[in-house]
Length: 309
Ligand SMILES: C[S@@+](CC[C@H](N)C(=O)[O-])C[C@H]1O[C@@H](n2cnc3c(N)ncnc32)[C@H](O)[C@@H]1O
Image (cartoon, rainbow, N blue to C red):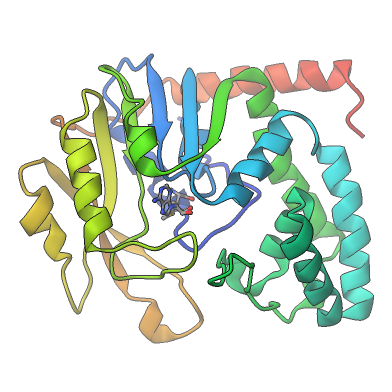
C-alpha cells in the first residue's frame, strides 16, 4: 500500500501533511465528484488525494498566484531551478542582506518565484503578512541551507505539483470561503481547514467568533458533504466551539504533534478533530498505490516528450 505523502513546494505553519492519510480515510467511496477547498493553504491535502475535479481557493492571493503560475507554465521546474540556484548562491555570499532585498522586491512586485524563495529561506517556513499586506517573516539565519541539495529538494517538490496540474482538473480561485462553499453541490466534498480560532492571526488569517459562526451557517446549509478540520483540545484548554457550535455533527479525534516555533512550550500535543455532516467510517484506500504508479508513468512519458531542463 502506498503511504508516501507528497510535500508541496510551499510550507506554512498550519500545513496538514501529517493528517492527510486520516482525512483521506474518511472520504466516502466511491468519490467521483468535485473536491472543494475554501482554505487551500499549501494545497497538501488535495495534492495527495488527487480528486477527479478539484477547486482550490484561499484569500491569500500569493498562494493562488503561485499555483496558477505552475498551472499555466509561467513557472516550470527548470525555471524554478535556475532561479533558486542564482538566488541561493547570492544568499550564500551576501547572507541576510540578500534575503531582505528579495523580501522588499516581493512586496512591490509579487513575483511567485520570490514568494517560493522567501517561503523556503524564511524563519520556520512561515507565511505571515503585516497589516498592509506585506510579507514580514524574518530570515532563518542559515544562508548555508540554500545549497544545491536543498534546491534539488524544492525543485522535486515543485515538479510533482507541476505535473499533477498538467494532467488533472484543478481550478484555483482567490476568494472568501462563503463564495467557495456556495459552489458545493450534492455529491461534492468540501474540505475546510480554516485558521484555528484563538491561534495565529495575520493579514490573511484573521479568524474570530463571527467568522466561525459564518462558517457554521454556510456548512450547515450546504447540500454537499463536508469535512472540517479543527482542534479539539490540548493539555491546557479545549475548543469550546465544538460543544457550543458543532456538536450536532459527527466528530472524530486524533493526536497531532505541532512544531510551531522553537520553544518547548509551543510543542504541546494537540488533539485534532474532523467534523463531518455524514457518518464517516475511516477506511484505507487500496487503490492509492495503483493511482500513483499511473501518475508516474504519465510523468515519465511527458518528460520524454518535452525538454524540461
Ligand atoms: C490552516 S490554513 C490551511 C492549511 C492547509 N489545509 C494546508 O494543509 O496547507 C488556513 C488558510 O485559510 C486562509 N484564509 C483565512 N481566512 C480566509 C477566508 N475568509 N476565506 C478563505 N480563506 C481564508 C489562509 O490564507 C490560510 O491559507
